[in-house]
Structure formats: C-alpha cells, structure tokens
Image 1 (tube, rainbow, N blue to C red):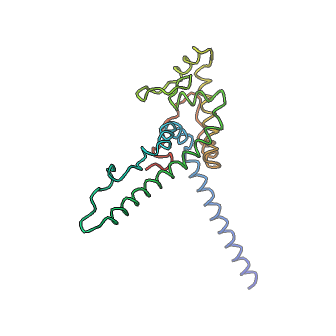
Image 2: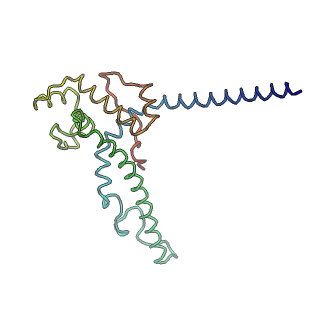
Image 3: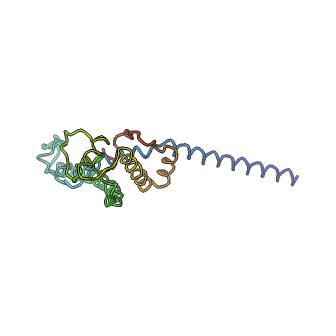
Length: 214
C-alpha cells in the first residue's frame, strides 16, 4: 500500500515537472518571437519627436479650459460652475497622467542613449535615426532619411573614411547593445534568436512602442 502511494506521488511530481518545463519552453518561444531589435529602431526613429514633446508642456495640452478643443466651455444643462471646474480638473489630470507616462518612458530611453552618445560610432545613430547632419544639426522634417551610402559620403567629406559595411556594423552593434539595456534578458534573447544580418536594412516594428503613447 505504501509503495503504491509512493509511486503515485512520484508520478504526480513528474507530471508537475513536465508542466513546468512546458511553461518555460513556451515563455522562451514567446521571447524569441519578439524582434526587440526592430522595436529599438522604432524608438530611436521617434526619439527626437518625443524629446520635443516632453520639453513642451504648453504644447502637450495643459491649456486653459477656454482654449481646449477636448472639453466644452459651457457646462451641461442643469450643471453649475462647480461641475465645469471639476470637468476642467479631470481634463488636466488626464493630460498630466498621459504626459507623465510619456516622460517616464522617454527618460528611460534617453538614459540609454546617453550611455553611447560619446562613442565615435554614435554618429551613425544620429544621422540614420535622428536625421541629423554629420555636424549634429537637425535636418528639415521634409528631408528623406539618409542612406548608408549618403552617410559614408558625408563623413568622407569630413575626412572620416568608413565603408557602408563598416557603418552598418556600427549601427547593428550599437542598436543591439541598446536593446539589451532597454529590455534586459528579453532583449538579449530576442537578439540571439534574430541577430540581424550585416548589410540588411533593419526597419519596421509596430508603432506606438515609445512611451506608451496614446
């Protein structure tokens, strides 16, 4: 009787271990299916836009109630001044909460960017993703994104001779390192599973990844 009970318990332990192993494998598969490298690229492409956004409180929607298009100036029929004030307070509270979420996410990304901005290779990030010139000046919003051929030519004019292949390698290594800092273990797993091939344009990923933008 005791041996039979022991065998049943052992069988239960084995089944529980198998279930646990399946859960771990499923989690690993999910992590590997995420292409967080491309997500990081999307964050970098939107970096300058969100930098302007978080530095412009007035432009974020904290305007007086009379100027807001999101709420009515006149209170609903039957309501008084206090209702209008409450509506305004709710409006400001919602805008501020949205702003704080955006700023918190941007600050996280900004901290990662600052870890690399003094590296020689970072010029590729500035030109390819931030749409800056080799001198660090913002290009017009209408300007098309640089190609690696154009980056190589502009740098050559400054006496920095790097082939397109070298510039792509710089880009890939920096984005990989940023991905790990941004996403931790999941970022490392994603990169290991989907390490981008040299010379391939890494663009894409879903929008709205940055800052939980609404």
